[in-house]
Image (cartoon, rainbow over all chains, first blue to last red; front, side):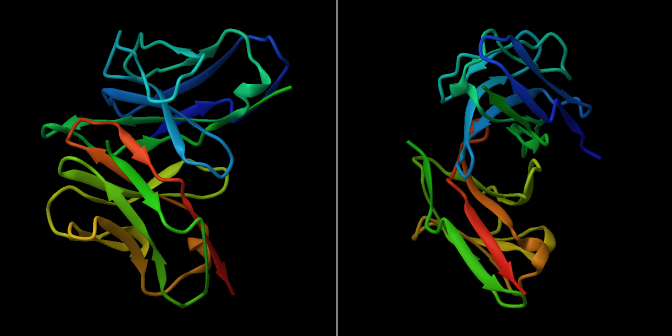
Length: 115
Length: 113
């Protein structure tokens, strides 16, 4: 069964704090993604990675950073959280097979609130 | 540039009646199209996908969608709604085999008893 995990599920934090949102997948997928989703809105891609040591910026500009040191792990970091960062963050992964990246599997999301 | 337009932000049906969620797309190349469902406080789950094979695509939980190139549409249907179908549905386009996904704004489906 496909498994992709995100921790924490909910986070309430004060302005200026450094935070790291964790994402791990057990499927050995090459490509991983971070999306930002405001309530009732569509998902916007903020970061993605083709594999270890690869990171790319997505369509939506974000002050967050990501790293990919291990295939299964793709953490997202905010150095100094601000209220404008309040949102839901969704992690996803997909497998490269048959010349294409197959469907993306999503984690349950982290709902971040910055006071 | 590719884009997706979901024509209804909210659809309400009665249990046992048909469901129609509408989606139009814009793409310069032969697109791949997907429908994802998101239940409250959950991640997204793939319902079905079109990748240039059969134009009528069957998915999970009785959902299906038809790719109509002439109308640039990929509407999602289900013959009989169930209470558990209440969720947010996203139409998604991917350009080519390696492009990133572009999401529509979503359609919230409500199912009345």
